[in-house]
Image (cartoon, rainbow, N blue to C red; front, side):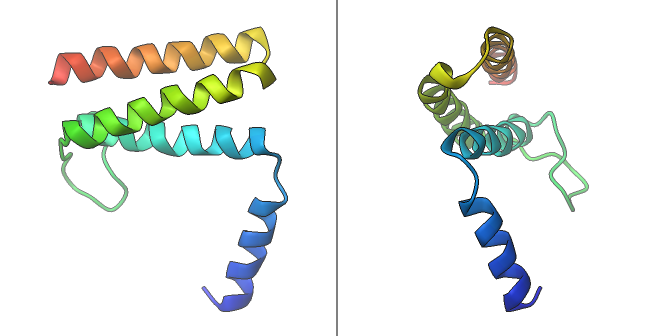
Length: 96
């Protein structure tokens, strides 16, 4: 990717509201948590790799970010986020 493309991506990310950024971060962290739990294959990998310490960190960060994001969410969005965190914690415990 050339420098110009990187600048366009950077500008588009910085133009987002904080709520949108937090939702993106949660999505990225959730994907990494599933990978670290060993239930999702990382891009470019042929085998899952379990790293429960990193999975725990990702889940904790999602919980913290969700608390800050909660005032901006609809009831349905908040419930969906609670369900995501619950699913991650349950699967973490099952695979620990």
